[in-house]
Each structure stands twice: as structure tokens, then as C-alpha cells.
Length: 326
Image (cartoon, rainbow, N blue to C red):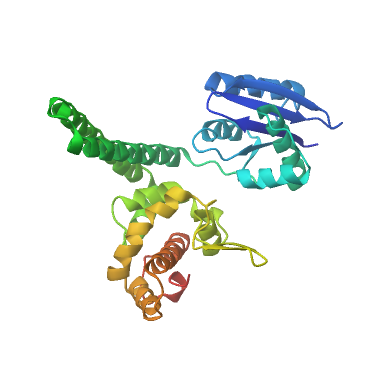
């Protein structure tokens, strides 16, 4: 018998709901830390299954806060589902739930898991976890550097030297993190193989490729290029109702925003130097499509090429139709 567990994740704590066979709920709150995860696991062993079998844990995707506990529970052989918060919100609305607390959210997640049986989450490999952490750190350092550089332009002369020192230190750390990223990819044969494949695609550079490796993860987890595009949010977002509501966007707000952002400038570069993307770009331009529509469409096509190259294991060739169809 499968036991369903909902976990409402926040930065400091985890609110846990264990759905019992008689439909009653056992609740517990633990710290979102290594010690708290161990406490949670022992509690599940005591109240669900003494060997930790047949446990289905469901939690929402909450940026960086859910990843560590999801990985811990996955390593303990529990089935873990990481679901889109919007799906859980719609489920709660369908049950006419009017009260929202962390404890009730955890209970809702447990019931959502029992009724919807969401797909199991696949934990990244240890080298991929390292790469994801390094890529995230590099993004943060680059953002901090840009902020300090902007402040330097308007800073009083009395603090300009302080800003320059911070920028110099950030430059040093950025250089070191980039070195660690290269080392991480070089040391893992699978990541190195995928990097070599992506390097054959015109438009992708040394900064974008590690981001794609980190954000996409194992490409085989996506059934098709369309599934990967949906994951990135490169699908239309349409809201229509009668004559009063007609909203359309070229991207979906629930997609993986960092992956989507990482494709923006490469798509513009590929529009000039990648023969497949360039032909597609010119075709859309000849149809008088707006510039933003062209860029998003080329991002979609570039991601399809990336998926084809990674899943086929073959380098990019402009004449290979299976790698260029979006």
C-alpha cells in the first residue's frame, strides 16, 4: 500500500502531512536542514513503513528550497514528485478549499498525490548537481558585478575605490567559478560528451553551453522536443473568454525561466551564423513578423536542434532534417 506524503517547503521549515489509509492526517514540522530531513525520515519510518517502502512524497517546485530535501528523500528510495504550484492551486480550488496555511497546503499536496499520481522526479547525478550549483553561483556573481558596476557610475568619489575593490574581488571569484565549471564538465564523461555535441551548434558559446547542460539535465527525461519546449515555457500562452478577454503571449510564464533566458542571445547570434536558424529567421522576416515573435520562434527552433543533437548523439549538420525540425 502506497503512503502519500505532502510537504510544504519554505526556506526555514518543512510542513509535512502523511495521509493515512483511513483518510486521517498525521502532521509534523521539521527544519529544512540536513538534521531536519533525517528527523523527517525517521518519523516516516515510524508512522508509514518501517523499511521506507511505498512512500510517494509530493512537493511544489520552490526554486532552490525544495531541491535538497527532494534529493535526500530520493536517495532514501522514496518516490518524489516535484509539481507545478499552479496545478496544486487549481486542485485546491476544485475542492472548494477556502483556508490556506502551510499545514493545510501540505495536506492538499498529499491528497493531490493520491488522486493525480504525478510522475516521479528524477534526481540529477552528483556531477550534474555540482554543475547546477556552479552555474547558479556564476549567475549570482555576474548579477552582483553588474549591480556594483551600475553603482560605480553614480557613486560619490569617497566610495568609488570601495566599489572597484568589490568589482575586482567579484572578477576573481567569477574567474574561479568558471574554471570550476570547466573542470566539472571535463571530469565527467557524460557531461563532456554532451558539451562536445553542443559545441557543434553555431550560436552556442562557452557561457551558454554549461547553462544548457545544467538546466536541461538528462535530455532523455523529455519525450520529445515539444516537451522540452513546454518545460522551457516556449509555448504560446493564450487566455480567451467571450469578447472581453483576449490575451496572447509567445511564451508561457510557468516555464523554466532561466533556461528560456539562456536561449535569447544565442538565438539572435544563430539568426546570423547558424544556417538553419538564419533561413528560418529570414523566412519569418519576409512575412513581416514582429521582431520579438521572430526571436521567440528561433529560440524554440534552436532548442529543438539542441534536443535533437543531445538525444541522437550526433553532431549538428545543417542538412540533417531530423535535427532541425522544431
